[in-house]
Image 1: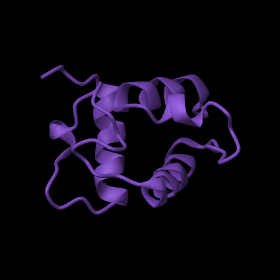
Image 2 (image 1 turned 60 degrees about the horizontal axis):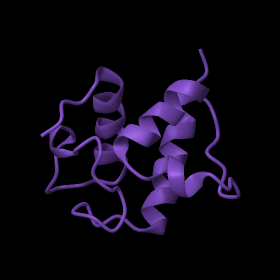
Image 3 (image 1 turned 60 degrees about the vertical axis):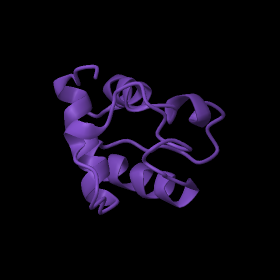
Image 4 (image 1 turned 135 degrees about the horizontal axis):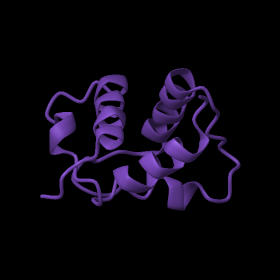
Length: 89
């Protein structure tokens, strides 16, 4: 299992809490594992919930019309990198 960075762990914790995942802990989310269509079983509604939680927690919007969303939401690593590049200071 790949080690999560501090930023990835913070984001994984946010995902687990905002989606009320009862069978997964933040530590169990692999940084490179697919967020959707993989073991987590997340769907498009979950993506909306994650986007809302990210906007509240990190101070920027993940827009539904962003053509890069498929890449941004590929894995915890790609989502974390996008958050780090765009978060409000």
